[in-house]
Each structure stands twice: as structure tokens, then as C-alpha cells.
Length: 260
Image (cartoon, rainbow, N blue to C red; front, side, top):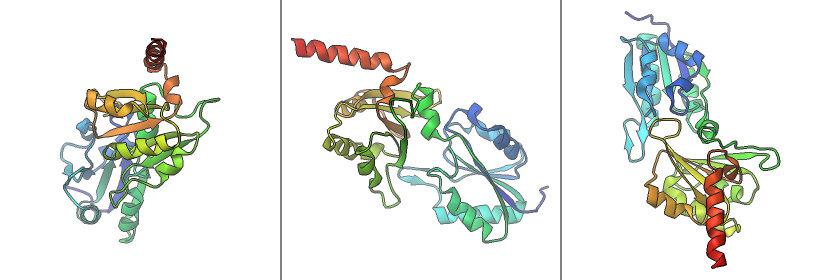
């Protein structure tokens, strides 16, 4: 039924919209005997794989891990040795907070052929879906991409460093640490810094909350925003053609309140 020449291809599924999967990624899926896939924003991506391909869910969500990382590593190897061509399908890009390098190292130690097909990272694509350019001439000349929650479940120390900079800050997996993140930016006197939080970016379920460091906590409560979401902090948020009007209205209301 299957060719048994073991090979594993790590494929980035992109940020959620199935049309943002790369052509090369779709071709790899079409040739897969086995697909081990994460908690994808859109499982329609699996339709690119053959109907008779074995599909194994190995995804993780907060408080719900179907497999440990060590178990996932071993499953990839076992399926490659048994069935041949395995696609490891990972959300976003495999090498951006995706533990792809750990998986490749483990697989390669068995002498199994490996390949990596990059995916469109949500770090860039999700802000772009709301017209936010994370760098813009005259506004932001660099950006930080940070995981909000480290392997020991703590807030990354890099957030405090990023708060001191003038760069755009993009934080993934940070919603559970939002009060700590806000506090760090407030300590740097950035209470008026623009913030956008985008939940389920690039999908039909997308929700967007916009405000400032001082107001975003209340906005999250009002709009019932939660994970998975991306936090974007920086003046480029105000520059978005989609969001600019919100900030203009915010500024006008603030002025009128002060005038009273």
C-alpha cells in the first residue's frame, strides 16, 4: 500500500487561512502516506493529503496536550520507518516557536531523510490581515517576535527588554500573561502605546481588539478575547488603514472629555 523509504517533511501550514498554505506545502501533503498534524486553525488543509493517508492529531492547546513532545518525536520516526513518507504539519512556520528544529534533530539521528517547507508565519501575516505593517519607514525600523510563555510557563524576559525599545513588539502565546506584559510597558511610561490583539487571525472566526496599553485589558474583557491570539504593540498599529479610524475616534473622545 505504501512505499517504505522513510522520509519526513516538516510543512508550515501558515496562519490559518487554508489559501495561505504554500504551493510546495500542498504538493508535499499530496504525496504523504502519513500526516501528523497540530491543532490547526483550519483543518481543511488536511484535504490536500490523499484520502487514504493516515492522519494523526498530535496538537496542543493550553491544558490539553494529546501527546508530549517526546512522544510526538517517536511517533514521527515510527511512522516514517513503517509507512515511508511522513508529513509533519505544523501551524505557522515550523521554525518560529514551533519546535521544528527539535523534531528534525531527533528524526535525523535515525538516519531518516528530512526536509523543511517553510510556512507563512502568523507573526507577520496576522497583523498584515488587519493592515498592520510591523515595520514602516519613519515609524518602526525593526520588530521583536517573542513567545509570551516559555517552556517553564513563565513570561519571557525578552518582553521587558522589548518594552524599552522603539520597535514593534509581536507576542505569541501571551494572553495568559497579558497583565504582566501591560505592567512592563507601563513601567516604561508607554501607557498610550497602541495595541492590537487579534484572535484566530486570517480565519472566519477572527476577532480584533484595539486600544492602548492602559485600555487594552478592559477591551479584552468587553470583547471576550482569548487564545489563540497575537498581541501587537507599537505605533504601526495606529498606522493601519483598517484601524486608523478607531484611534482617531479614541483621540477625539479623549480630547472632548478633557475639554469638559
